[in-house]
Image 1 (cartoon, rainbow, N blue to C red):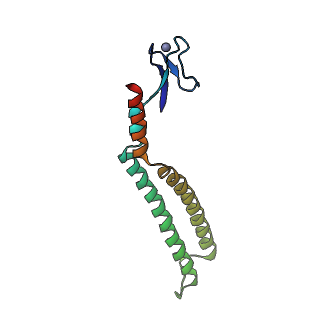
Image 2 (image 1 turned 180 degrees about the horizontal axis):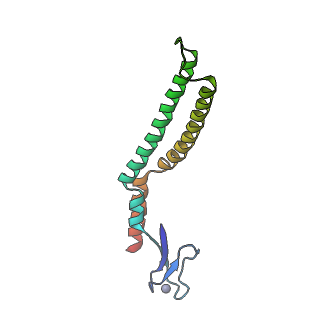
Length: 136
Ligand SMILES: [Zn+2]
């Protein structure tokens, strides 16, 4: 999101990936320039809400599968005369459910870690304040 460095004296642009603080041409101080619309978009509340919603879906599916696995297990030990599944099918189904639940938990942990890693509003406010100071 750091787009480039800009000389405060001549206005020349330099790539942001090079570590330098003064302009090679006139020794003007270089300021970091940010892609503010991109920063705002990345941390917009709508986008965050969408990501939180997707995480909720993941966890909901994981929960549904836990309930399903419990049903399949109790089907084997229940009082009912006839089980709906054979032993082999039941085992295969439980294995598939367990595999899917592991994947969902892994994704939920990864997405949740990203979603809650920082406080977006405060972060954006600080970046914008820093950029505004640098423009004075
Ligand atoms: Zn310059």
